[in-house]
Image 1: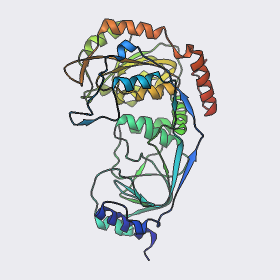
Image 2 (image 1 turned 180 degrees about the vertical axis):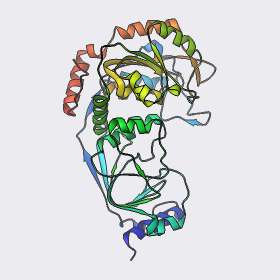
Image 3 (image 1 turned 30 degrees about the horizontal axis):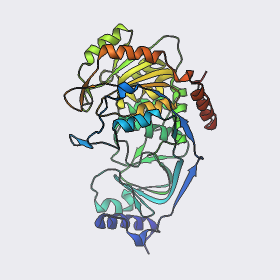
Image 4 (image 1 turned 90 degrees about the vertical axis):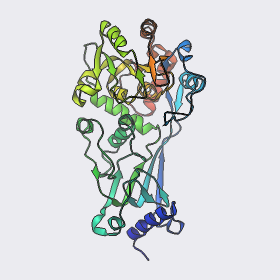
Length: 392
């Protein structure tokens, strides 16, 4: 009979050999899941105009320039998402995994293998006990598949770690690299540095299902906002300039838009030229934030003021509502403006006169003036015991 550790390691190699978990070792590790919360609906209110949404094509190709699209992003689908009044949240789910082997790309336990990264390993690394970090108990610090982009880390992995910061020692996998300004965000939120071992064997591993939008994630969003936002009387209107890495979303006449916004009193913030501290100082307690959809907009979730306004410019061929959805749940007014097609799905432009009139209409609107929405938001915040000044 193998020792438990050697059994898990053996299953790792047999699983790789056959391309799947090995059944006769399936019961070596026990797994227990804990599901929290009842069914909860989060209030949703995002400003949009039907004529503007009609710029989105009826059908979007599933794959363009080798970039996969997640789900249906047709005009019909986007309208359905925008017209909803609430969002059904997933339940908060935690797993207690017994005798788990964490490698650079996988977690092996209970006959399941969750791929994280694609890298090769040597047999000697896992069979020798001296080369394997071992813990009685720990918390897995990353998403199932790790965070692919900076925005995923900000909106998913960072709040997960913030919510579990008192649950025990964090452990991670070796292929995990630092994200943009991660050290600054950790210092700001008093989060410990993650131990990224060669490989780890944990007798009791706590793992959270971080693939979903659940109440515990939202609790962390509210808590982080409360810790970060410093109220001030000065009015802040910010345009966030997308850096050159965003090749799949290129606003061709951005200089023209910037000239217009600067005349309106906006400050232009270029992520490529500033660090995390400058980002926090500039965006903290912002009244209005405008920018092209993308992960560079995700810090706004934690920095725009209560009852502030976020306007997200959407490429007509690549619409994503993640940022406005998440920020709206935190009680911030959000609006979606679809730009005009350029040469293809990735290049687009904005008609300044049309956008100027649109901004004026948005400023005369506010979800906080919607009595039904206000009631739903108050009930939602009370249900989750959220502390915020989002509703006056």
